[in-house]
Length: 255
Image (cartoon, rainbow, N blue to C red; front, side):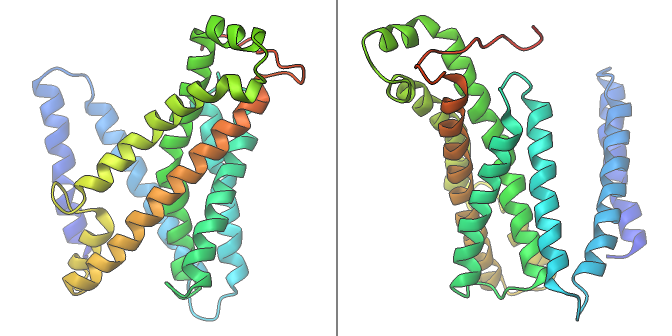
């Protein structure tokens, strides 16, 4: 990809801005700013990755990058869901657990060679694709317990321990968080061509090889989303109930 090609592709951003002006959406500044910010961030990341994955560089730097991604993702989750009590340590634990399982399988069983050029992108896919689902699961669980407090307390009054009393609401939160990823997985290849596969084909990789890599990525994401959401929801149950099985106060966002 040449700089000229990159500059030409930016005309598509102008199309989005013109549509905003035409329909008086007031989003043209956001469109231009988001595109400029994304390009800047990608260039900075690209420069950093070039240093990390160059031949002879210690793999320690790639692992440090992974740890930094997990920590930053936890902070993003905290800012996205301020109504969820102490969500940051939960999400950090969830991303770490998913990374440990997925990376252990992919590298431990030689699906991919353990190198900086494979470790960093795969860890990034684990964390990045799990982020939305994890935050959604946490927010949905808090919302369910808050809005159905009378039901929860009735279960507790009947002698159910907090974990048992929370089971229906945990299941609802997990279904809400997992369903979009399951539907995306179903549609892969028929409704749309995923990014990894498209990128490989554009780079000249044979289509069948690109398909195999995309299948691994697809399974990786599905398993990671399931792992992170269940870790967060089960961990959150411990946070919102006291040791004597009482539901703590769960204020609405902004209150």
